[in-house]
Image 1 (cartoon, rainbow, N blue to C red):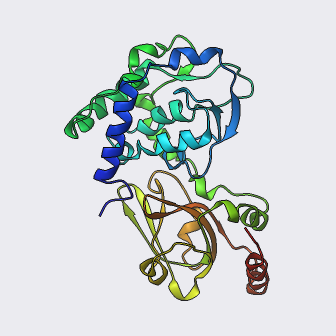
Image 2 (spheres, rainbow, N blue to C red; image 1 turned 135 degrees about the vertical axis):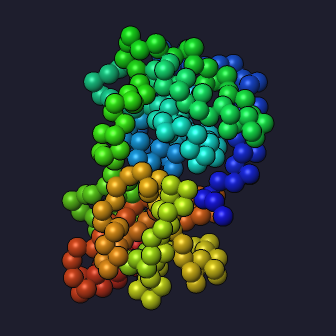
Length: 291
């Protein structure tokens, strides 16, 4: 069984493409519109590990609210999971979650060469499911590269890029993990304390099985009996980013996450750094949180 996105995802993508085909193209209209920097939400699975943390809103596809961005971006996960080109994520996120740099007033577009490489790699895959390359991704509208834009990785840089994998978005460290956990628990779908029984890869994602006996569920509304009995968590793109902490399978972890297309996806993970007494005290504190 594949990760969260199946044939249903392709049907959803097909509906999105039909809508885009009937709508006027809007990329050229955005340069004069006022935008603001927003943090890329952890629930935006498409852009986990993209390499930056802030995006412009409205984005380059005219989505004005984060709710709209999340809905539309999620429809493109089927293409990402097919791994039709190594830079599909970079290209899609440059449009759905364009990088926001405080020193630049103008949006940074993908270079035409990046679009063309992803198009050439992914068009056959989309065609196999009956979908054309969408007009809203027409490569001729993007800069040639003689101005600031996001280029593809040069052939000579590929090995270096592989050696310098970015940290997984869920594993970014912070100075106060306990405070982070308490502040974020209410806007996540689940929260737990666990140790790890096993890790395995599936379609570039990391499948995480908690040790049931040491697991403590703090928030698990809507979980099925199967999920309560045998919890399966996922770290998106876990094969293409680094999360050194998770390899310590004897450690205790605090975990937060979202349900995405029926799967429990980790969006925040930290290793517990203090003793058992402090952990019991913290667990009591977590149970007092009212969302």
